[in-house]
Amino acid sequence: MSYTVEERGDLHSLTYRLFYKNADGKVVSPFHDIPMYADEGQNIFHVVIEVPRWTNAKMEIATTEPLNPVKQDVKKGKVRYVANVFPHKGYIWNYGAIPQTWEDPTHKDPDTGHVGDNDPIDVCEIGSKVCSRGEVIKVKVLGILAMIDEGETDWKVIVINVDDPEAKDLNNISDVKRLKPGYLDATVDWFRRYKVPDGKPENQFGFNGEFKDKDFAIETIKTTNKFWKALISQQAKPGELNCMNTTISPDDSPCHVSVDQAKAIIEKTSPPGAVEAIPSSVDKSFYYERK
Image 1 (spheres, helix red, strand yellow):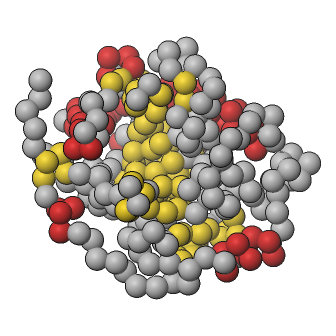
Image 2 (image 1 turned 180 degrees about the horizontal axis):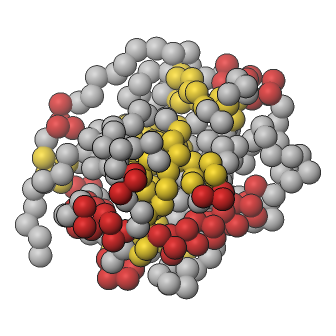
């Protein structure tokens, strides 16, 4: 199934939201309604692209808002951009999340010893194409990195778009090491240091920063899908998370809403508007001496 997006508000402002519709024009949540699998038999997954490669605007699925539109993260009342920690520029992959997954903040992962970060599982898509913000793509999984962010497990799944010309040659994390030398090392370096410009310490990693293979990654994704199923059925406490959806059976999810209710939510948001200018400071590089 294909998906389209509807932009609301002003891009790069506090009002910006990106809502989703399926092929039938029905409003859906990218967190809860888009299926995790594009093809379960082939282990092909859907990914919602939040941040296109080489860009800095920290877009993310708004997990606490009705219908979970994509919006720009906010810090101290201003929209957030990731810094360019030299030698990197913006995000070095197409960055997004797998729908119908959830890293449970009450579950201590046996491999990392830390609880989940309360978000859908993150994805780095490493193909040759720069994706569009909000695009929903089909991917095959190659491996996974266990980042520890302020005491929480924050998995990063390495994937490639099945339609990418390089997809036929990349089937596991070992292929990435062989065909894209330096890319995985750069990925660890990026995640280790990207919060330092905000005054935070370097992030740490499980497995000494080593990537686990495809099979391990797929099992991790499946585990986060089980956590999501408990969330959407309200067997797990959602806290501030919003589980509103339009496609899950009301018998399986008390947060199901009608099409008309979903449309009304979109209509209450700001109408499509202008594009706010990106501050010139976003293009600057950040340097620091590593200890």
